[in-house]
Image (cartoon, rainbow, N blue to C red; front, top):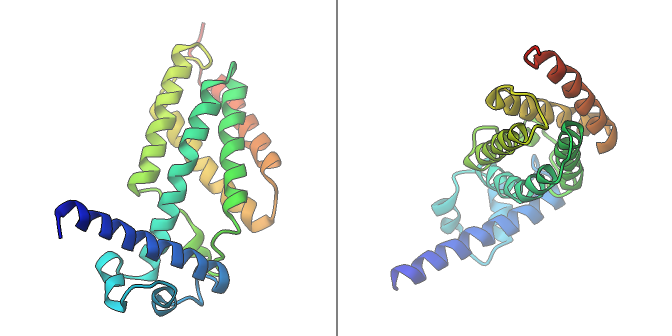
Amino acid sequence: MTAGRRELTKSQNRQAILVAARQVFADLGFGAATVRDIIRATPLASGTFYNYFKSKEEVYQAIRDEVALTIVPRLQEERANAATAEEFLAASFGAFFEFVVAQQGEVRSDRPEASRLRLDTPEVVAGFGALRADLESAIARGLFPNIDPHFLSAAMAGVAFEISEQMLRRGCGAAPARDFATALFLGGIKALAPPG
């Protein structure tokens, strides 16, 4: 088998596991699902699973990482179209919270620790980098005062993740969460602006 064909097979096997796991997690819930359930939902041999993942938790994280990548282009587009700081914040938080609500039903998890996003995966870190770059651009365009984009992106990401968890726990929609986060940051940014 050539190297190119081998890589294609590996990619297809990994994708088959992820597709099967999505369905199994949606049907059974994360807590009830087992690696054996995932393997049975694929056409692969049982040992093949362990060439790609060590546990169902690793599969779940891989699914979450893939999902995290899909929102980045939409967030970047929304932020690029913003004409004011308020539009930038509302677009960022709104798109993210709507995405969280839409993804809620994809993987049913009866264990809160399983649904918590890991903030240290390469995919999520890339999303933070995109936010920071968009903030730097917005500062250069005059939408924000000259404040630290590293701190601001970290604060926005932290607030977005924590509020999204509260949204899901409380069954609250995206709009109230967006409005709260936007108002919180608009008030705080004014206090951070350098004098004069």
